[in-house]
Image 1 (cartoon, one colour):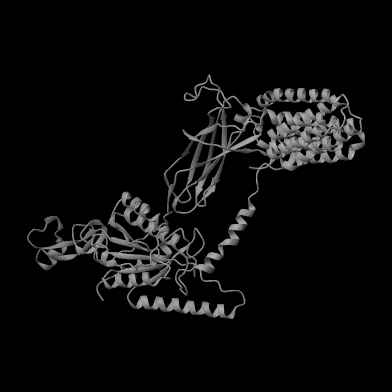
Image 2 (cartoon, chains in turn orange, purple; image 1 turned 60 degrees about the horizontal axis):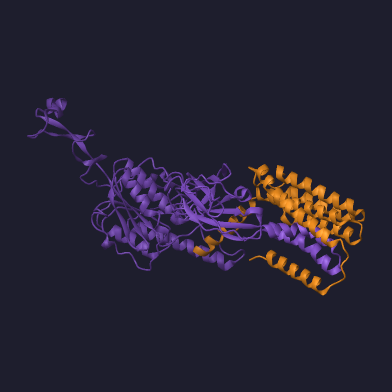
Length: 179
Length: 454
Protein backbone atom coordinates (compact mmCIF):
# COMPACT_ATOMS: atom_id res chain seq x y z
CA UNK A 1 0.00 0.00 0.00
CA UNK A 2 2.73 2.43 0.88
CA UNK A 3 4.55 2.11 -2.40
CA UNK A 4 1.94 3.02 -4.97
CA UNK A 5 0.30 5.71 -2.91
CA UNK A 6 3.58 7.36 -2.02
CA UNK A 7 4.80 7.15 -5.60
CA UNK A 8 1.94 9.27 -6.83
CA UNK A 9 3.27 12.25 -4.93
CA UNK A 10 6.41 12.65 -7.04
CA UNK A 11 4.94 14.21 -10.20
CA UNK A 12 2.95 16.73 -8.20
CA UNK A 13 6.06 17.84 -6.35
CA UNK A 14 7.90 18.28 -9.60
CA UNK A 15 5.05 20.30 -11.02
CA UNK A 16 5.05 22.63 -8.01
CA UNK A 17 8.77 23.14 -8.31
CA UNK A 18 8.53 23.82 -12.02
CA UNK A 19 6.08 26.66 -11.54
CA UNK A 20 8.46 28.77 -9.51
CA UNK A 21 10.23 31.44 -11.54
CA UNK A 22 13.04 33.58 -10.23
CA UNK A 23 11.82 37.13 -9.75
CA UNK A 24 13.46 40.13 -11.30
CA UNK A 25 14.18 38.76 -14.75
CA UNK A 26 13.72 41.17 -17.67
CA UNK A 27 13.48 44.06 -15.24
CA UNK A 28 16.47 46.38 -15.75
CA UNK A 29 17.61 48.30 -12.70
CA UNK A 30 19.46 51.59 -12.54
CA UNK A 31 22.72 49.76 -12.06
CA UNK A 32 22.12 47.49 -15.05
CA UNK A 33 21.19 50.50 -17.18
CA UNK A 34 24.41 52.21 -16.11
CA UNK A 35 26.32 49.05 -16.99
CA UNK A 36 24.62 48.97 -20.37
CA UNK A 37 25.60 52.60 -21.00
CA UNK A 38 29.19 51.83 -20.09
CA UNK A 39 29.04 48.78 -22.34
CA UNK A 40 27.84 50.94 -25.23
CA UNK A 41 30.69 53.39 -24.64
CA UNK A 42 33.17 50.53 -24.45
CA UNK A 43 31.99 48.94 -27.69
CA UNK A 44 31.69 52.22 -29.58
CA UNK A 45 35.23 53.07 -28.43
CA UNK A 46 36.50 49.72 -29.70
CA UNK A 47 34.65 50.15 -33.00
CA UNK A 48 36.04 53.67 -33.30
CA UNK A 49 39.58 52.46 -32.74
CA UNK A 50 39.23 49.63 -35.27
CA UNK A 51 36.32 50.31 -37.67
CA UNK A 52 36.94 47.09 -39.58
CA UNK A 53 35.85 45.06 -36.56
CA UNK A 54 32.29 46.39 -36.51
CA UNK A 55 30.71 42.89 -36.60
CA UNK A 56 32.43 42.15 -33.30
CA UNK A 57 31.11 45.39 -31.85
CA UNK A 58 27.58 44.57 -32.98
CA UNK A 59 27.79 41.11 -31.42
CA UNK A 60 29.17 42.67 -28.25
CA UNK A 61 26.33 45.18 -28.15
CA UNK A 62 23.80 42.37 -28.41
CA UNK A 63 25.54 40.55 -25.58
CA UNK A 64 25.59 43.70 -23.45
CA UNK A 65 21.85 44.18 -24.02
CA UNK A 66 21.19 40.58 -22.98
CA UNK A 67 23.35 41.08 -19.88
CA UNK A 68 21.42 44.20 -18.92
CA UNK A 69 18.05 42.49 -19.31
CA UNK A 70 18.62 38.99 -17.99
CA UNK A 71 21.59 39.11 -15.60
CA UNK A 72 23.07 36.16 -17.47
CA UNK A 73 26.73 36.33 -16.34
CA UNK A 74 28.21 34.91 -19.54
CA UNK A 75 26.60 37.63 -21.66
CA UNK A 76 28.55 40.40 -19.94
CA UNK A 77 31.77 38.42 -20.31
CA UNK A 78 31.10 37.95 -24.01
CA UNK A 79 30.48 41.69 -24.47
CA UNK A 80 33.75 42.57 -22.73
CA UNK A 81 35.65 39.93 -24.71
CA UNK A 82 34.16 41.30 -27.94
CA UNK A 83 35.40 44.78 -27.07
CA UNK A 84 38.81 43.39 -26.17
CA UNK A 85 39.03 41.42 -29.40
CA UNK A 86 38.02 44.43 -31.49
CA UNK A 87 40.50 46.74 -29.79
CA UNK A 88 43.16 44.02 -29.88
CA UNK A 89 42.71 43.64 -33.63
CA UNK A 90 43.28 47.38 -33.98
CA UNK A 91 46.41 47.23 -31.83
CA UNK A 92 47.74 44.26 -33.79
CA UNK A 93 47.11 46.10 -37.03
CA UNK A 94 49.07 49.11 -35.76
CA UNK A 95 45.91 51.23 -36.10
CA UNK A 96 45.60 51.97 -32.38
CA UNK A 97 48.13 53.71 -30.21
CA UNK A 98 49.14 52.23 -26.87
CA UNK A 99 47.61 55.06 -24.75
CA UNK A 100 44.31 54.60 -26.58
CA UNK A 101 44.49 50.87 -25.88
CA UNK A 102 45.10 51.65 -22.20
CA UNK A 103 42.02 53.88 -22.11
CA UNK A 104 39.94 51.20 -23.82
CA UNK A 105 41.14 48.60 -21.30
CA UNK A 106 40.12 50.90 -18.45
CA UNK A 107 36.70 51.34 -20.01
CA UNK A 108 36.31 47.58 -20.20
CA UNK A 109 37.22 47.31 -16.51
CA UNK A 110 34.67 50.00 -15.62
CA UNK A 111 32.04 48.05 -17.53
CA UNK A 112 32.92 44.86 -15.64
CA UNK A 113 32.70 46.64 -12.29
CA UNK A 114 29.32 48.13 -13.14
CA UNK A 115 28.12 44.75 -14.34
CA UNK A 116 29.17 43.23 -11.03
CA UNK A 117 27.19 45.84 -9.13
CA UNK A 118 24.14 45.19 -11.30
CA UNK A 119 24.38 41.42 -10.82
CA UNK A 120 24.80 41.66 -7.07
CA UNK A 121 21.33 43.19 -6.86
CA UNK A 122 22.40 45.92 -4.45
CA UNK A 123 20.32 49.07 -4.72
CA UNK A 124 21.25 51.06 -1.64
CA UNK A 125 24.59 52.83 -1.54
CA UNK A 126 25.35 52.48 -5.25
CA UNK A 127 26.72 56.03 -5.55
CA UNK A 128 29.03 55.47 -2.61
CA UNK A 129 30.13 52.21 -4.14
CA UNK A 130 30.92 53.98 -7.41
CA UNK A 131 33.03 56.56 -5.60
CA UNK A 132 34.95 53.74 -3.92
CA UNK A 133 35.75 52.24 -7.31
CA UNK A 134 37.35 55.45 -8.64
CA UNK A 135 40.75 54.74 -7.00
CA UNK A 136 40.69 51.25 -8.48
CA UNK A 137 40.02 52.65 -11.93
CA UNK A 138 42.67 55.33 -11.53
CA UNK A 139 45.25 52.76 -10.46
CA UNK A 140 44.28 50.53 -13.37
CA UNK A 141 44.60 53.41 -15.83
CA UNK A 142 47.97 54.38 -14.36
CA UNK A 143 49.23 50.83 -14.67
CA UNK A 144 47.98 50.62 -18.23
CA UNK A 145 49.66 53.89 -19.20
CA UNK A 146 52.93 52.69 -17.65
CA UNK A 147 52.71 49.49 -19.65
CA UNK A 148 51.90 51.48 -22.77
CA UNK A 149 54.92 53.72 -22.27
CA UNK A 150 57.12 50.72 -21.62
CA UNK A 151 55.91 49.04 -24.78
CA UNK A 152 56.59 52.03 -27.01
CA UNK A 153 60.28 51.21 -27.78
CA UNK A 154 60.53 48.27 -30.11
CA UNK A 155 61.78 45.21 -28.30
CA UNK A 156 63.35 42.29 -30.13
CA UNK A 157 61.58 38.94 -29.59
CA UNK A 158 62.90 37.40 -26.39
CA UNK A 159 62.35 33.93 -24.92
CA UNK A 160 62.31 35.53 -21.46
CA UNK A 161 59.41 37.76 -22.43
CA UNK A 162 57.50 34.79 -23.78
CA UNK A 163 58.21 32.84 -20.58
CA UNK A 164 57.00 35.76 -18.45
CA UNK A 165 53.84 36.07 -20.51
CA UNK A 166 53.07 32.37 -20.22
CA UNK A 167 53.71 32.53 -16.47
CA UNK A 168 51.32 35.47 -16.16
CA UNK A 169 48.68 33.60 -18.13
CA UNK A 170 49.13 30.53 -15.93
CA UNK A 171 48.79 32.63 -12.79
CA UNK A 172 45.61 34.18 -14.13
CA UNK A 173 44.24 30.74 -14.90
CA UNK A 174 45.03 29.55 -11.39
CA UNK A 175 43.26 32.56 -9.96
CA UNK A 176 40.24 32.07 -12.15
CA UNK A 177 39.89 28.35 -11.53
CA UNK A 178 37.20 27.44 -8.96
CA UNK A 179 38.43 26.24 -5.57
CA UNK B 1 24.63 38.02 17.95
CA UNK B 2 26.77 35.00 17.21
CA UNK B 3 29.97 34.99 15.21
CA UNK B 4 29.86 33.11 11.95
CA UNK B 5 32.88 32.15 9.88
CA UNK B 6 32.46 33.02 6.23
CA UNK B 7 33.68 30.56 3.62
CA UNK B 8 35.44 32.63 0.99
CA UNK B 9 35.81 31.66 -2.65
CA UNK B 10 36.76 33.39 -5.88
CA UNK B 11 33.74 35.16 -7.28
CA UNK B 12 32.38 34.98 -10.79
CA UNK B 13 33.40 38.63 -11.18
CA UNK B 14 37.04 37.69 -10.52
CA UNK B 15 36.84 34.91 -13.11
CA UNK B 16 35.37 37.31 -15.61
CA UNK B 17 38.08 39.95 -15.05
CA UNK B 18 40.74 37.23 -15.32
CA UNK B 19 39.25 36.00 -18.60
CA UNK B 20 39.21 39.53 -20.00
CA UNK B 21 42.85 40.04 -18.95
CA UNK B 22 43.90 36.67 -20.33
CA UNK B 23 42.75 37.28 -23.90
CA UNK B 24 45.08 40.23 -24.74
CA UNK B 25 47.88 38.66 -22.69
CA UNK B 26 47.77 35.55 -24.82
CA UNK B 27 47.54 37.70 -27.93
CA UNK B 28 50.60 39.67 -26.85
CA UNK B 29 52.60 36.50 -26.25
CA UNK B 30 51.50 34.63 -29.36
CA UNK B 31 51.54 37.56 -31.81
CA UNK B 32 54.56 39.29 -30.32
CA UNK B 33 52.62 42.52 -29.95
CA UNK B 34 53.56 44.28 -26.69
CA UNK B 35 50.93 46.95 -27.35
CA UNK B 36 48.29 44.41 -26.39
CA UNK B 37 49.69 44.41 -22.87
CA UNK B 38 48.24 47.89 -22.40
CA UNK B 39 44.80 46.47 -23.06
CA UNK B 40 45.25 43.76 -20.43
CA UNK B 41 46.92 45.99 -17.86
CA UNK B 42 43.78 47.55 -16.25
CA UNK B 43 42.12 44.18 -15.60
CA UNK B 44 45.39 42.70 -14.36
CA UNK B 45 45.89 45.69 -12.04
CA UNK B 46 42.38 45.30 -10.64
CA UNK B 47 43.09 41.62 -9.96
CA UNK B 48 46.36 42.48 -8.26
CA UNK B 49 44.73 45.14 -6.08
CA UNK B 50 41.99 42.84 -4.77
CA UNK B 51 43.84 39.54 -4.79
CA UNK B 52 44.14 39.28 -1.03
CA UNK B 53 41.71 36.74 0.29
CA UNK B 54 39.61 38.33 3.04
CA UNK B 55 39.63 36.79 6.47
CA UNK B 56 36.75 38.48 8.18
CA UNK B 57 33.56 36.80 9.22
CA UNK B 58 30.06 37.91 10.10
CA UNK B 59 27.91 38.36 13.14
CA UNK B 60 24.31 37.34 12.81
CA UNK B 61 21.21 36.97 14.88
CA UNK B 62 18.23 34.95 13.64
CA UNK B 63 14.85 35.07 15.33
CA UNK B 64 11.67 33.14 14.71
CA UNK B 65 8.52 34.86 15.92
CA UNK B 66 7.16 31.79 17.75
CA UNK B 67 8.42 28.45 19.01
CA UNK B 68 5.13 26.75 18.25
CA UNK B 69 2.21 27.31 15.93
CA UNK B 70 -0.64 25.49 14.25
CA UNK B 71 -0.73 24.27 10.67
CA UNK B 72 -1.60 27.08 8.32
CA UNK B 73 -0.30 29.82 10.59
CA UNK B 74 2.44 32.20 9.53
CA UNK B 75 5.75 32.80 11.26
CA UNK B 76 8.06 35.75 10.88
CA UNK B 77 11.78 35.07 10.51
CA UNK B 78 14.07 38.01 11.16
CA UNK B 79 17.79 38.04 10.52
CA UNK B 80 20.22 40.77 11.50
CA UNK B 81 23.71 40.42 10.09
CA UNK B 82 26.85 42.48 9.85
CA UNK B 83 30.43 41.88 8.84
CA UNK B 84 32.87 41.49 11.67
CA UNK B 85 36.60 41.26 12.06
CA UNK B 86 39.19 42.82 9.76
CA UNK B 87 36.63 44.71 7.80
CA UNK B 88 36.24 47.26 10.58
CA UNK B 89 38.62 50.11 10.94
CA UNK B 90 40.89 50.01 13.98
CA UNK B 91 39.33 53.15 15.42
CA UNK B 92 35.86 51.71 15.60
CA UNK B 93 34.39 49.77 18.45
CA UNK B 94 32.84 46.64 17.01
CA UNK B 95 31.20 45.70 20.29
CA UNK B 96 29.37 48.98 20.42
CA UNK B 97 28.50 48.84 16.75
CA UNK B 98 30.21 52.19 16.24
CA UNK B 99 32.91 51.10 13.83
CA UNK B 100 32.75 51.78 10.16
CA UNK B 101 33.36 49.05 7.69
CA UNK B 102 36.43 49.68 5.62
CA UNK B 103 35.16 48.28 2.34
CA UNK B 104 31.96 49.76 1.11
CA UNK B 105 31.78 47.19 -1.64
CA UNK B 106 31.79 44.46 0.95
CA UNK B 107 29.07 46.11 2.99
CA UNK B 108 26.80 46.86 0.10
CA UNK B 109 26.77 43.30 -1.09
CA UNK B 110 26.06 41.61 2.24
CA UNK B 111 22.79 39.85 1.60
CA UNK B 112 20.61 37.18 3.13
CA UNK B 113 18.39 34.60 1.50
CA UNK B 114 15.85 32.28 3.08
CA UNK B 115 15.51 28.67 1.96
CA UNK B 116 12.21 27.45 3.45
CA UNK B 117 12.08 24.06 5.14
CA UNK B 118 10.18 21.21 3.54
CA UNK B 119 7.19 21.62 5.85
CA UNK B 120 6.97 25.35 5.24
CA UNK B 121 5.95 27.58 2.39
CA UNK B 122 7.52 30.95 1.74
CA UNK B 123 5.11 33.80 2.25
CA UNK B 124 5.60 37.52 1.90
CA UNK B 125 9.06 39.00 1.90
CA UNK B 126 11.86 39.50 2.15
CA UNK B 127 11.70 42.98 3.58
CA UNK B 128 15.33 44.03 3.66
CA UNK B 129 16.69 47.09 5.38
CA UNK B 130 20.31 48.20 5.25
CA UNK B 131 21.00 50.38 8.27
CA UNK B 132 23.76 52.95 7.60
CA UNK B 133 25.38 50.58 5.13
CA UNK B 134 26.70 48.42 7.94
CA UNK B 135 23.94 46.12 8.86
CA UNK B 136 21.40 44.05 7.00
CA UNK B 137 18.05 43.35 8.59
CA UNK B 138 15.82 41.03 6.61
CA UNK B 139 12.43 39.61 7.44
CA UNK B 140 10.48 36.84 5.77
CA UNK B 141 7.17 35.19 6.48
CA UNK B 142 6.67 31.45 6.15
CA UNK B 143 3.53 29.37 6.50
CA UNK B 144 3.54 26.02 8.31
CA UNK B 145 2.15 23.28 6.09
CA UNK B 146 2.47 20.09 8.09
CA UNK B 147 2.41 19.23 11.77
CA UNK B 148 5.62 18.05 13.37
CA UNK B 149 8.80 19.48 14.74
CA UNK B 150 10.58 21.15 11.88
CA UNK B 151 13.17 23.76 11.12
CA UNK B 152 11.44 26.57 9.24
CA UNK B 153 14.42 26.73 6.91
CA UNK B 154 17.88 28.14 6.75
CA UNK B 155 19.20 31.58 5.98
CA UNK B 156 22.14 31.89 3.64
CA UNK B 157 24.36 34.91 4.14
CA UNK B 158 26.45 36.08 1.21
CA UNK B 159 29.14 38.75 1.41
CA UNK B 160 31.43 40.15 -1.23
CA UNK B 161 34.95 41.36 -0.54
CA UNK B 162 36.24 44.76 -1.45
CA UNK B 163 36.30 44.90 -5.23
CA UNK B 164 34.01 41.91 -5.42
CA UNK B 165 36.75 39.40 -6.25
CA UNK B 166 35.77 37.04 -3.42
CA UNK B 167 32.42 35.91 -2.13
CA UNK B 168 31.89 34.70 1.40
CA UNK B 169 29.06 32.44 2.42
CA UNK B 170 27.61 31.28 5.72
CA UNK B 171 24.49 29.41 6.68
CA UNK B 172 22.40 30.26 9.71
CA UNK B 173 20.38 27.35 11.04
CA UNK B 174 17.04 28.40 12.44
CA UNK B 175 15.66 26.86 15.64
CA UNK B 176 13.10 24.09 15.30
CA UNK B 177 9.46 25.03 15.58
CA UNK B 178 6.73 22.79 16.95
CA UNK B 179 3.86 22.79 14.46
CA UNK B 180 0.68 21.55 16.06
CA UNK B 181 -1.94 19.76 13.96
CA UNK B 182 -4.85 21.86 12.80
CA UNK B 183 -7.83 20.53 14.79
CA UNK B 184 -10.97 19.95 12.73
CA UNK B 185 -14.30 21.03 14.17
CA UNK B 186 -16.67 18.68 15.99
CA UNK B 187 -20.03 20.21 16.83
CA UNK B 188 -21.77 17.24 18.46
CA UNK B 189 -19.93 14.99 20.86
CA UNK B 190 -20.08 11.21 20.91
CA UNK B 191 -20.75 10.06 24.44
CA UNK B 192 -20.27 6.72 26.16
CA UNK B 193 -23.27 5.02 27.70
CA UNK B 194 -21.73 5.13 31.15
CA UNK B 195 -20.41 8.33 32.62
CA UNK B 196 -18.13 8.23 35.60
CA UNK B 197 -18.70 10.12 38.81
CA UNK B 198 -17.09 13.34 37.79
CA UNK B 199 -18.92 16.61 37.59
CA UNK B 200 -19.55 17.64 34.01
CA UNK B 201 -22.09 18.90 31.53
CA UNK B 202 -23.71 15.71 30.27
CA UNK B 203 -26.93 14.38 31.76
CA UNK B 204 -26.45 10.90 33.17
CA UNK B 205 -29.01 8.13 33.52
CA UNK B 206 -28.38 8.05 37.24
CA UNK B 207 -30.18 10.66 39.35
CA UNK B 208 -28.21 13.51 40.75
CA UNK B 209 -28.16 17.23 41.33
CA UNK B 210 -28.44 18.40 37.77
CA UNK B 211 -31.12 20.50 36.15
CA UNK B 212 -32.63 17.98 33.74
CA UNK B 213 -35.90 16.29 34.79
CA UNK B 214 -35.47 12.52 35.16
CA UNK B 215 -38.66 11.28 36.89
CA UNK B 216 -40.93 11.31 39.95
CA UNK B 217 -40.62 9.15 43.05
CA UNK B 218 -41.97 8.99 46.59
CA UNK B 219 -40.61 11.38 49.16
CA UNK B 220 -37.81 10.00 51.31
CA UNK B 221 -36.24 11.48 54.40
CA UNK B 222 -33.58 13.97 53.40
CA UNK B 223 -35.28 15.14 50.22
CA UNK B 224 -35.54 18.86 49.78
CA UNK B 225 -39.00 20.35 50.09
CA UNK B 226 -38.48 22.52 47.02
CA UNK B 227 -38.42 19.33 44.92
CA UNK B 228 -41.88 18.21 46.01
CA UNK B 229 -44.10 17.73 42.98
CA UNK B 230 -47.39 19.07 44.35
CA UNK B 231 -49.70 18.01 41.48
CA UNK B 232 -48.57 14.37 41.76
CA UNK B 233 -48.69 14.55 45.57
CA UNK B 234 -52.29 15.83 45.43
CA UNK B 235 -53.31 13.22 42.90
CA UNK B 236 -51.80 10.23 44.76
CA UNK B 237 -52.26 11.39 48.33
CA UNK B 238 -48.62 10.98 49.32
CA UNK B 239 -45.56 13.18 49.01
CA UNK B 240 -43.72 12.81 45.71
CA UNK B 241 -40.60 14.60 44.60
CA UNK B 242 -39.02 15.29 41.21
CA UNK B 243 -35.87 13.40 40.36
CA UNK B 244 -33.15 15.21 38.41
CA UNK B 245 -30.48 13.64 36.27
CA UNK B 246 -26.91 13.93 37.43
CA UNK B 247 -24.53 15.90 35.25
CA UNK B 248 -21.25 14.19 34.68
CA UNK B 249 -18.23 14.40 32.48
CA UNK B 250 -17.36 11.90 29.78
CA UNK B 251 -14.02 10.16 29.60
CA UNK B 252 -12.75 9.69 26.09
CA UNK B 253 -9.44 8.23 24.95
CA UNK B 254 -8.19 8.60 21.38
CA UNK B 255 -5.88 5.94 20.02
CA UNK B 256 -3.59 6.82 17.12
CA UNK B 257 -2.29 3.99 14.97
CA UNK B 258 1.19 5.11 13.95
CA UNK B 259 2.28 1.69 12.71
CA UNK B 260 1.66 2.62 9.10
CA UNK B 261 1.49 5.84 7.14
CA UNK B 262 0.10 5.83 3.62
CA UNK B 263 -0.77 8.65 1.29
CA UNK B 264 0.57 11.92 0.04
CA UNK B 265 2.76 13.94 2.40
CA UNK B 266 0.53 16.30 4.34
CA UNK B 267 -2.55 14.23 3.55
CA UNK B 268 -1.33 10.83 4.66
CA UNK B 269 -3.24 8.55 6.97
CA UNK B 270 -1.03 9.49 9.92
CA UNK B 271 -1.52 13.19 9.19
CA UNK B 272 -5.27 12.69 9.23
CA UNK B 273 -5.16 10.50 12.32
CA UNK B 274 -3.26 13.08 14.32
CA UNK B 275 -5.49 15.91 13.11
CA UNK B 276 -8.57 13.88 14.00
CA UNK B 277 -7.27 13.19 17.50
CA UNK B 278 -6.47 16.88 17.92
CA UNK B 279 -10.00 17.78 16.83
CA UNK B 280 -11.50 15.40 19.37
CA UNK B 281 -9.16 16.73 22.06
CA UNK B 282 -10.22 20.31 21.44
CA UNK B 283 -13.93 19.51 21.33
CA UNK B 284 -13.98 17.38 24.49
CA UNK B 285 -11.68 19.56 26.56
CA UNK B 286 -13.76 22.61 25.65
CA UNK B 287 -16.88 20.81 26.86
CA UNK B 288 -15.27 20.08 30.21
CA UNK B 289 -14.83 16.39 29.51
CA UNK B 290 -11.74 14.38 30.25
CA UNK B 291 -9.71 13.42 27.23
CA UNK B 292 -6.63 11.21 26.95
CA UNK B 293 -4.47 9.76 24.24
CA UNK B 294 -2.67 6.50 23.50
CA UNK B 295 -0.24 6.21 20.63
CA UNK B 296 0.47 2.83 19.07
CA UNK B 297 3.63 2.47 17.04
CA UNK B 298 7.08 2.83 18.40
CA UNK B 299 7.08 2.88 22.16
CA UNK B 300 3.62 2.69 23.68
CA UNK B 301 2.84 6.20 24.88
CA UNK B 302 -0.11 7.72 26.58
CA UNK B 303 -1.43 10.93 28.05
CA UNK B 304 -3.65 10.48 31.09
CA UNK B 305 -7.15 11.92 30.60
CA UNK B 306 -7.58 15.45 31.79
CA UNK B 307 -9.62 18.49 30.95
CA UNK B 308 -9.09 22.08 30.01
CA UNK B 309 -7.01 23.94 27.49
CA UNK B 310 -3.77 22.83 29.12
CA UNK B 311 -4.68 19.22 28.40
CA UNK B 312 -5.29 20.03 24.75
CA UNK B 313 -1.85 21.57 24.37
CA UNK B 314 -0.29 18.66 26.22
CA UNK B 315 -1.86 16.26 23.76
CA UNK B 316 -0.86 18.40 20.78
CA UNK B 317 2.70 18.51 22.07
CA UNK B 318 2.79 14.77 22.60
CA UNK B 319 1.76 13.83 19.07
CA UNK B 320 4.06 16.00 16.99
CA UNK B 321 7.00 13.63 17.32
CA UNK B 322 5.01 10.53 16.47
CA UNK B 323 6.17 10.45 12.85
CA UNK B 324 9.67 9.41 13.79
CA UNK B 325 8.67 6.46 15.97
CA UNK B 326 9.08 2.95 14.63
CA UNK B 327 8.85 -0.40 16.32
CA UNK B 328 8.32 -4.04 15.41
CA UNK B 329 6.86 -4.82 18.82
CA UNK B 330 3.16 -5.46 19.26
CA UNK B 331 1.67 -3.02 21.76
CA UNK B 332 0.70 -4.54 25.07
CA UNK B 333 -2.28 -2.56 26.29
CA UNK B 334 -2.00 -4.24 29.68
CA UNK B 335 0.92 -1.91 30.30
CA UNK B 336 -1.30 1.15 30.05
CA UNK B 337 -2.18 2.19 33.61
CA UNK B 338 -5.75 2.33 34.75
CA UNK B 339 -5.57 6.09 35.11
CA UNK B 340 -4.64 6.48 31.45
CA UNK B 341 -7.37 4.12 30.24
CA UNK B 342 -10.22 4.36 32.76
CA UNK B 343 -12.78 1.56 32.78
CA UNK B 344 -15.73 2.33 30.55
CA UNK B 345 -13.99 5.19 28.75
CA UNK B 346 -15.02 5.70 25.15
CA UNK B 347 -12.15 4.79 22.82
CA UNK B 348 -11.92 6.38 19.36
CA UNK B 349 -9.20 4.76 17.30
CA UNK B 350 -7.84 6.54 14.23
CA UNK B 351 -6.28 3.93 12.00
CA UNK B 352 -5.84 3.15 8.30
CA UNK B 353 -6.54 -0.52 9.14
CA UNK B 354 -3.34 -1.63 7.47
CA UNK B 355 -1.48 -3.19 10.37
CA UNK B 356 -2.67 -6.29 12.18
CA UNK B 357 -1.23 -5.09 15.48
CA UNK B 358 -3.55 -2.07 15.50
CA UNK B 359 -6.54 -4.24 14.63
CA UNK B 360 -5.65 -6.65 17.43
CA UNK B 361 -5.38 -3.69 19.80
CA UNK B 362 -8.89 -2.54 18.86
CA UNK B 363 -10.26 -6.00 19.54
CA UNK B 364 -8.36 -6.13 22.83
CA UNK B 365 -9.85 -2.81 23.93
CA UNK B 366 -13.34 -4.02 23.09
CA UNK B 367 -12.81 -7.21 25.05
CA UNK B 368 -11.81 -5.10 28.04
CA UNK B 369 -15.31 -3.58 27.98
CA UNK B 370 -14.58 -0.23 26.37
CA UNK B 371 -16.96 1.16 23.80
CA UNK B 372 -14.70 1.41 20.75
CA UNK B 373 -15.20 3.34 17.51
CA UNK B 374 -12.73 2.81 14.68
CA UNK B 375 -12.23 5.76 12.33
CA UNK B 376 -10.69 4.66 9.05
CA UNK B 377 -8.36 7.44 7.94
CA UNK B 378 -7.18 5.78 4.74
CA UNK B 379 -8.43 7.98 1.94
CA UNK B 380 -6.65 6.40 -1.01
CA UNK B 381 -6.54 3.01 -2.59
CA UNK B 382 -3.54 1.27 -4.11
CA UNK B 383 -3.08 2.24 -7.74
CA UNK B 384 -2.68 -0.82 -9.96
CA UNK B 385 -0.40 -0.62 -12.99
CA UNK B 386 -2.29 0.64 -16.05
CA UNK B 387 -3.87 -2.05 -18.22
CA UNK B 388 -2.82 -4.74 -15.81
CA UNK B 389 -5.43 -7.42 -15.30
CA UNK B 390 -3.47 -8.91 -12.44
CA UNK B 391 -3.31 -5.47 -10.81
CA UNK B 392 -7.07 -5.00 -11.08
CA UNK B 393 -7.63 -8.43 -9.61
CA UNK B 394 -5.28 -7.61 -6.76
CA UNK B 395 -7.19 -4.38 -6.12
CA UNK B 396 -10.49 -6.25 -6.02
CA UNK B 397 -9.01 -8.78 -3.60
CA UNK B 398 -7.72 -5.92 -1.46
CA UNK B 399 -11.16 -4.32 -1.35
CA UNK B 400 -12.77 -7.63 -0.42
CA UNK B 401 -10.21 -8.08 2.32
CA UNK B 402 -11.01 -4.63 3.70
CA UNK B 403 -14.71 -5.39 3.60
CA UNK B 404 -14.14 -8.65 5.46
CA UNK B 405 -12.04 -6.83 8.04
CA UNK B 406 -14.76 -4.28 8.66
CA UNK B 407 -17.31 -7.04 8.99
CA UNK B 408 -15.08 -8.84 11.48
CA UNK B 409 -14.67 -5.71 13.57
CA UNK B 410 -18.38 -4.91 13.50
CA UNK B 411 -19.17 -8.44 14.55
CA UNK B 412 -16.98 -7.79 17.60
CA UNK B 413 -19.08 -4.71 18.40
CA UNK B 414 -16.62 -2.21 16.96
CA UNK B 415 -18.30 0.12 14.46
CA UNK B 416 -16.08 1.39 11.66
CA UNK B 417 -16.55 4.79 10.11
CA UNK B 418 -14.53 6.82 7.67
CA UNK B 419 -12.99 10.25 7.89
CA UNK B 420 -12.70 12.44 5.95
CA UNK B 421 -13.64 10.35 2.95
CA UNK B 422 -15.34 7.05 2.94
CA UNK B 423 -13.90 3.86 4.22
CA UNK B 424 -13.53 1.43 1.38
CA UNK B 425 -16.97 0.39 0.13
CA UNK B 426 -18.79 2.51 2.70
CA UNK B 427 -21.94 4.41 2.01
CA UNK B 428 -22.71 6.97 4.65
CA UNK B 429 -19.90 9.49 4.66
CA UNK B 430 -18.95 9.95 1.04
CA UNK B 431 -17.25 13.22 0.24
CA UNK B 432 -17.14 14.55 3.76
CA UNK B 433 -14.96 17.62 4.12
CA UNK B 434 -11.88 17.26 6.28
CA UNK B 435 -12.60 20.56 8.00
CA UNK B 436 -15.10 18.84 10.27
CA UNK B 437 -15.22 15.54 12.12
CA UNK B 438 -19.01 15.60 12.15
CA UNK B 439 -19.59 13.62 8.93
CA UNK B 440 -17.57 10.73 10.28
CA UNK B 441 -18.98 10.68 13.80
CA UNK B 442 -22.52 12.03 13.36
CA UNK B 443 -24.02 8.54 13.28
CA UNK B 444 -22.82 7.93 16.86
CA UNK B 445 -24.27 11.12 18.32
CA UNK B 446 -27.91 10.01 18.11
CA UNK B 447 -27.50 7.51 20.92
CA UNK B 448 -24.79 6.86 23.39
CA UNK B 449 -22.20 4.26 22.54
CA UNK B 450 -22.49 1.24 24.76
CA UNK B 451 -19.70 -0.92 26.05
CA UNK B 452 -19.74 -3.69 28.57
CA UNK B 453 -18.06 -7.07 28.56
CA UNK B 454 -18.97 -9.39 25.77
